[in-house]
Length: 156
Image (cartoon, rainbow, N blue to C red; front, top):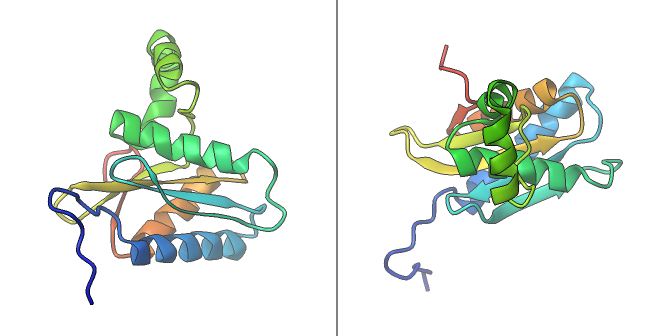
């Protein structure tokens, strides 16, 4: 018997794509020789789809990874842009932090996942190493799943 979702529910990112993202993100971290990583994949509704914490990843890494992805979903752009705005608009970022109960982390490593048509399917957050390197791994994972990574920078 095939499972069908109730009418009106959108799946966004699939479980298969989330698994690919987890595996490819961590593989990129190993390739680069990074510190142990934690990866969180959120669906289009900002809910947890998948997560994996590498052996040796420190205590708060899941919360940080979630916060990077959550912030991207909350504002509709990758956390690289959120980091820029935290510098230029600290009052807004303070308000966002209050509204999000402190859950939005404004540093690179939170990447929106888009379909080919630009629709947001979810977000990936990575934490464990330097934020720029976390972001590189998230992008590699998203691309391995055949999806488009939106870091908050304009496409090259």
